[in-house]
Structures are given as C-alpha cells and as structure tokens.
Length: 337
Image (tube, rainbow, N blue to C red; front, side, top):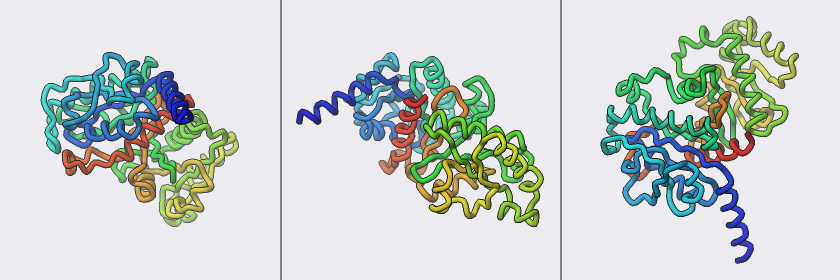
C-alpha cells in the first residue's frame, strides 16, 4: 500500500510539473467529442491534457471541469476532463456537419497552436477535422491540418509522419492527385523531407544516428529504367550525395519489399514517395494505434490517424486507441524537446 501511494504521488508530481497538451475539439459532428472523454478515462493518471472546444458537444454524462487557463489542467486531470471552453453557438448533431461550426473549428486550432508557441502547452494534439466542411463553411484554403499548422507556425514546409509501434513512415508528397506526384516530387523536395525526418528523429525521438529507407517512385524502383527513370535520373544520385554528407540511407528500394518484418528491422523510418505508398502499410500493420505526427515545426503536434467517422458518430462505437496513442506520443516527444 505504501509503495502504491509513493508511485501515485510521483505520478502526480510529474503531471503537475509538466505543461499540459492542448487537445483540439475537431469536427463536432464526427466522433471527435466522443474521443476526448474516452482518452481522459484511459490517461488521467499518466499525463495531462486539456480539451479545447464546446463542452455542450461532449457526450451526455461526461465528467468535465471548466478551466480558465491551460495551467489548471494538470490539477483537474485526475478528477475530470479539463475543458477550455469555446462557444460554437449551436448544438452538435452527430453525423451531420454544421457549416456554422467551421470558423470555430479553425479558431480552436489557432488557439492551440498559440498556446504551444507561447510555451503554455507542451504540445498540440488535434482531433479529426472534415476538410470539406471547413472549405464549405469557412473557405478553408489548406489541404489539411499539416499544411495549416505549418502556416500558423510561420510558414515553411512541414513533413507528415505516420508512427506506430510497428512502423514510422513519411510520405514525401501528401494530399495531391497521383497524377501530380512526378512533377511535385523534386530533388529539393525529397532532400527537405529526408533532412527534416532525420533531424526530428534525433531531436524528438532520441535516435542519435537514424537510418532511413527510401522507396522508389516506380514499381520495382524502376527496375533499371525499364519501369521509369526517375530513380536513375535523380533519386539515386541525390541519395548518394546525402550519404556523402553523413546520412544513413538505404535505397531507392522497391516499395513492395520494404515493409515486411525483417525489412522494417533494418531502419528507423521509411520515406515513401506518395500518400498511399506510405499509409497503406502502416494502416495494414496497425490500424488502431497509428499516429499522425507533424515534423519540422517549432512545436510538437500529433493526431489520431483516422477521420471524422460520421457514419458511427453518436453510436458509442468510436475507438479511442489512436487518440490515446497520439496523446502519449505527444507527451513523450514534448519531454525530449
């Protein structure tokens, strides 16, 4: 009993001495408001976060407590979900997006990033948004969270990583049509993605000498030019140049042989050339626990690796596993920064 009490006291001191994570409320009509109390129930003794959103959108019966500042969240966390309230003006209807909520969803993201940039939040964890709803309701000009967060942090090109206990993978191009990939994927862009990934693996993940596996763009990595020449023309020469600079890089590799267990054991992260080349393997390997991490920002940001799930909103079938993992990873990364 005494040992359990001492452990609990140590955990409490850790919560009180570490800045909370700002958890954005996401799309109210989806499962986002349902995920927050589930994550709180699972993590209330492990870490501290604060829900930024409209408390009236939380499921009936949620144990929550309003806070005036983020700093209060650590003290509130063991007994209730801390909520920094933002009035969205109208109720949530599960599964039915309200265009009037779009501006508020965006403002909450801005608020969370501001709290992280000021040092009040240790990290930002974003619950899923519906990009079409934001475009329709607020003329949202960004392809997704990743690009918007980079804008809020002062510009520059951020990098999206998908992470799970089984795999870390980075798509070099993200939310664009497959037909546009060959023109968007340039030597400079791929170099930037490799540099940012290696730097954040060192800084945020404590990997002193990260090894990266680089996929080819074409089937079989071009097979010596028989299935495309990008690998010969510039991808392989770029990797050779970066190896000479000290980067530990394997590739370009055929993407269809990069993701089995023995291959994954040989690298710390994989760089894929386009969205589905990256997301299919991680969602196949670990669908429920995958986490979206934005690299190259001055703040720590994570997110569950799934969407708004309008089809199951309000049914009680939401799975909080990815949100829980996203919060845990953000907490760990923030502690290494």
